[in-house]
Structure formats: C-alpha cells, structure tokens
Image (tube, rainbow, N blue to C red; front, top):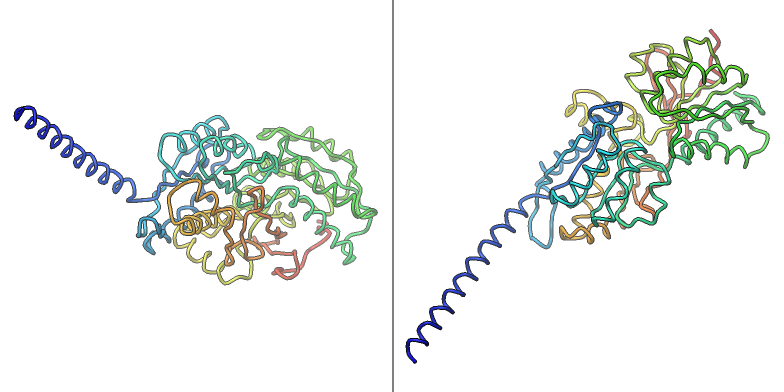
Length: 416
C-alpha cells in the first residue's frame, strides 16, 4: 500500500505546515496586540460638564505622556515595557452615552481598564459595566457613595466620598466657632442638587451637626434639579429662611448660575459655600469680586505644601498651557499612576489580575491630601478634604486644616 503511505505522509506534512503557519500568525498577532497597553478614557469634553472633563483629561494625558517618556509600563510576563495607548471617548455630558461608551470600550475595543466618569450622574451610569465585563474601572470625578456600595469588584474611585465633604464643611465651620470668629447657634440654609451627590453632602453636614449639638441649626433645606436655568424662586425661599450661613451643593455651571442670581437678589450671609465648587477660573471670570470669600471643600489644591505638588503644577502648566483649575486634574493624574502601578505589580495584562493588584495599590507620593492613595474595601479612597477660600484679587488660600493652611480664614464675610 505504498500509495496510501505516501498520501498519509503528505497529509501529515500539510497539517504540520498549517500548524506552523497558524502558530506564526498567532504569535504575530499577539506581538501586535501586545505592542501597547490600551486604556479607555470616557469623559465629557462637550456639554455642560465640558470644562471639568477637559481638565481631567489633561491630568490623564499628562500622566500617560510622562509614563511613556520613561519607556512605558513594565509587564513582567512579557519581559518588556509597553507604552500606554489612550482610547478616548467624549460622552457629551450625557448619561446614556456615557454608559454606552464605557460598555463599548470594555466589550469591543480591547482596553484593559477604563478611566473617567466625571460627575456623579455619569459615574452612576457607567458603574454597572465594570463587573459585567470584568474590566477595571477607575472613576476620576464621581464620589457619591451609591456608586461604591453595591459590592462591585471592578469599581474604583480616586475621590473621597461626598458625605465626608459635607462633614468636613461643617467641621470647618465649627472650628471657626471654636476660634470665636463665628457665634454658636447660627442658622444654616441648604440647597442641594437632586442627585446622590447632593444627598451625601447634606447627610454629612447634618450628621456633624447632630454629633455636635449647639453649634448650628439647619432651618432650611431644599433640592434643585441639576442644570436648572433659574434659581430665583429657590433663592427667595432661602431669603425668607433668614439664615446666617448659606451652603449649596452644586456642579460648576449650577454654581455660576445660582451665585449670579444670589448676587442679583441682594442676598448676604456670614458664610457661603457651593460644596466642592468655588475657586474655578470660570466663576471668577463670570462674577469678578462677587466670588470673594466663598469657601469650598475640595479633593485637592495646587497650594498643598508637597514637593510633588509643586512639580506637578510646573509640569501641568508646561503641558496644558495653564495652571491647574481647582481640584480636577490631580485625581485623574493619580488614577493613571495607580493603574500603572497595578499593572507592574500584576506583571500581566490580565484584567482580573490588574483588578486584584489595584486593591493593594499604595501610592505614598500621591498628590492628594495626606500624600497617600489607596483604595478601600469598596474601591473608593478616603483621603482628607482641604477647605479653600477665595480672597480679593483672585487669591485662593487653603484655610483648613491648619497644617496645610496657606492663609487665615476671613470669617464672617465682611459687610460691604
């Protein structure tokens, strides 16, 4: 059966050649796939959240640029450093689009992680996707506790919870009472955005007041819709409450709209805050000295007295062409650094291994207050807030806590 033997040999040879070709092609494909580390970034650079979204993107882009200039991220399994390749998506400040783009990045575009989600509304929309597609997700701009209390395993965040913002705000006001700058028993009026962010902020304030009886009394609290064009009716109610202190929880555009109408209505209080908003350049540009003496609790300040913050400020200005505006770029910058640290620790591009490594990340040279970034059991960090106050002439001072202060609190607001 020599013919049959020859046919069998030819068939075996053909199979062997096919296997070699297939193996070579697969190796080639793998090599191509492993020429970079694809990271999705979903942020609003159009729509109502465009400015903060752009600032966060600049923080991310700066970190990626610096890492790549240093050769990239070491992946032990591959025995080489790989550059980070950003895959960017503009969600146009739209919740449905934000969720859809996060899903696309994780399910179709081959990213090993997704960063972004500026604002609670956009963060909540995206947060259901990471566990579904088993892809690490680091929110750089959403802090509501509702995002992190579902037991998700692939969800992380570089902003401390908003209820801590509320309690720190009340704690700061309490410190002014202790210093004799404000009297005990002052009345507070609150307006809160109708989101989980607003709920957390109000809860933090009320909890501190409950735990420290005699300091303050909340005499008015009402919610408003995010993105409202007119707050005049709400502000008339605030006026009728005859409170001493006005505290609002608002995003940037609502802060500008509300405070412009506050000024137009002739309102005046001993202290004014719009939550985590206050020192932004757009607000100063829109209202000039009308924003003087507003204080804000923020996740980061360019005035923090750390050497790494000074270097970041210099690098950021050279990269973006302007100084950091409020807190926005720093948590985004550190999110990239945390992800790169996790990849190096995992030694692989396996997404579950990277997730596990993120749980153990401990950046001891973080830009954030306290200089340390590590994720809690629920994936959210818990770094302290700093309180800043707008001063005349465009100056912004850190006024609390004392060990980070660059200036004294002016309280109460001087009467004109």
